[in-house]
Image (cartoon, rainbow, N blue to C red; front, side, top):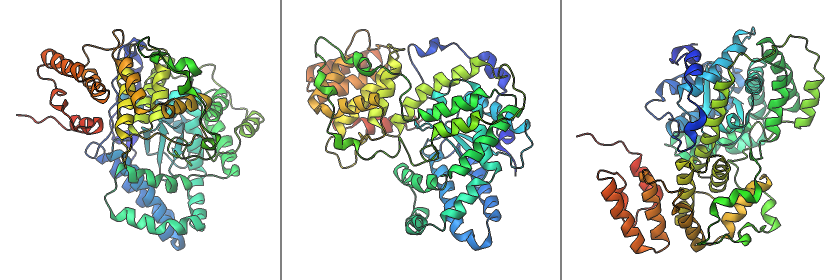
Length: 500
């Protein structure tokens, strides 16, 4: 089978390492990375189809029908994720990952070679082996690693699962379970229909159920992963560092607590401490938002401390390099981009509290970043417009069992405000001389929307007039009409511009 590593052209690593601009570009704005769609993702979707067929041939005949349903569910999940914009399409980011993956595979005599490496637009901290040559890492994971060696061990660990054929062993065990028998009817329905992004998320549980490994499998993958890491010339410290990253998967990256909300401290509308009050303890009893902390490989890993101890006692004597061969400039840029992409992905996946929390984190470092200011304003607007709607355009979880204290504060903040208070906070946040960017078309529209939601009709009219005078051909002007929600407006904006 051909490898996408060689068939899909990527710019060389040396070019990307030498041409990366400085981090100053993040001070004032950020442009989200491109993603695949139904057209640009066709080559990858074809690879997934071919890989699935090859893997089905490896299944025992007696289990081919049932196990095949699981593999087809995974292919359907990834295919729709690609079509719906859930996979990053960025050569510079992908090249750094490819460089590390190539070093591991060429530095070791692996029986099974990877064919496809995807970057998921997913804020959770995770990496996956799908068992048929496809590997994936989330932008959430990339945002939290600190060194090339940590990323290398994460990939080596997943390669070890593939080399040891853990996925097929787990799938064959799964088809014998009552859980699988209870989901067959639902799977058949999904395969017969054109599924939406919401339906894609329904596939997650089955997909990740098949990725859950036993403690023995995880320890085997850790042990082999360490050997692969060292033989490829990476440092042993990457293994323990990566496990530390996984151990902090449910925690936000930076700790600011109440200081996180400083952008909402204004004299015209004073911040109310009651907005941060703890909610009833019942809301910490069970999870409702399974997308943030999904039932995937990390959540079912054995105790991290136990794994760290096992790795520390490993007496592998393969020599280590003093310094990773991957330039830190490239990995630092990857991390910084991924921090922003984690905000993008949280909003993409309709997670209001996580979107706001991650954006406020980055605002501590980039207080004038127009993208962060806009995404915070968008979140408030969509929460207000979603109140009472049967299908909200953005989701605010009720239960927070897996949240750290900082994310719980954000969740409390959003739950404790009524729509009027939320509108006032949003207006005073964006209607700020130091914050509002007069050259940013979207911010005129967002402020126009907020004025409508807070009944500032005269101010709303002035904003529309100023926008028209400043941007005579601006696309937002036609959207400044009553009855159009923000999510509807954004859908219109995402449509291709018609050419005359």
